[in-house]
Amino acid sequence: MFGGDPNQMLFQLENYYRDGRLELAEVLSTQLTESLSAIKSRNQDQQLMLVKSLFFLSQILQARGKTKNASKSIKQ
Image (cartoon, rainbow, N blue to C red; front, side, top):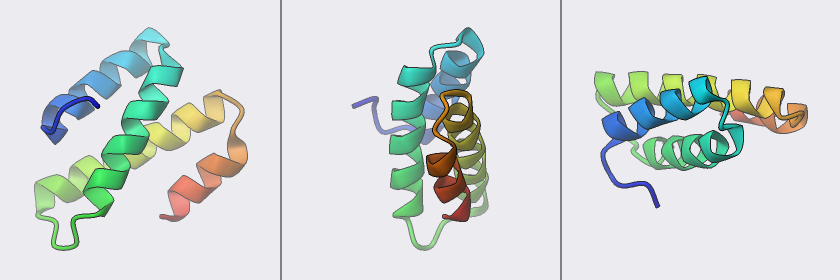
């Protein structure tokens, strides 16, 4: 949906989050988190991007009143 470069997706996610476009940021962070989680032997950069995307996802879900989903995303 948003391309394949995780660095670009994370940059765009931060912009959406900062601009208050939380619905779009939720979709992007969910997709990024799922794609990075699927990589079983992640390098250090990929692991850092996964942690950042999980952070944004939990913040976005909490801001949108989806607290149960935010708790689930943290436990991943």
